[in-house]
Image 1 (cartoon, rainbow, N blue to C red):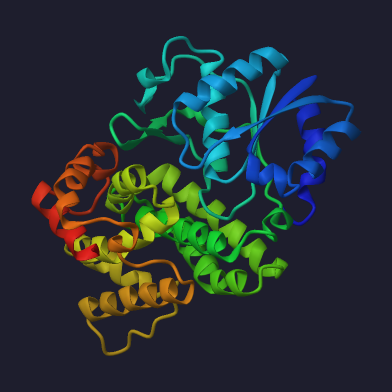
Image 2 (cartoon, rainbow, N blue to C red):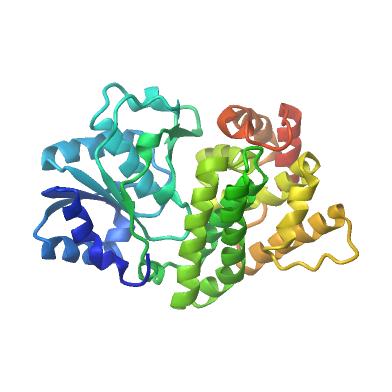
Length: 371
């Protein structure tokens, strides 16, 4: 990790004894020139490589089959995931589908993958998902209008290379959305029923780094210190939620992301304050403790008053970053809420982590508040 770290990727591949690799990315990353330092390092190490740039935002699971076909055509022995969460998640799932039979739909869920996949190296170009240190991949099922997860220890990458220089060219709105996603990972993992002292440590530090540097990275994209802090924060949040899990915020984000194509970080930001207000009764002291990484003064306040200030701080951050705040901004109407709420209730993997039991009527009410 650090500025210039990408220059060492060729040597990292050689450590695996691999002769040919496939870089998995999207057209935006490729057109921004971000494959060039990866290619240069691979060439210097005398390695052959191919490039698959067919990843799309919030990728359909069908993309995996296209990527698997290219792996087999190129006879690649290792995959490099280069980009945001979408290329990294396609890399993870492609790696395991090369060595496991059957349709990928059979593996949605937890610990359903029988065989290890190809080795992978992840190179994030956003400070957002933390997917370079998680055993999780999220893909879109357009038939069910849902995002679905595959969770397996075989999804852990062999290595992650975090170079903040790769994030300097991110547009401000992408910096904002991905940064909010990372912050929300830490908030949710910290308040998950599966949180431990160790995950709390990672999440607290992640929230402190992200909250204190996201505005700077948004306002001055070439500030390498802020970009470095954001990458570290996203990484630590990834470790936190890989172990404690995220909660209902993500469960609410998946249906609106799949149905209305709302960017993932924006969808999470839209839902965060409303879900916190609902969840706070489940663990009031833990939600009040969020004041610490946000630097909120709490003297003379009770825990409920402190949580009000926490929510106000999150609202102010989203406003400063110009992240949309209402579902109606994306064409969501009240008539859509029953269908969306039913989608939330299907995300049982995440609702199981939530600090408060959620029922269908609760889901409808929360979406209505977010309109």
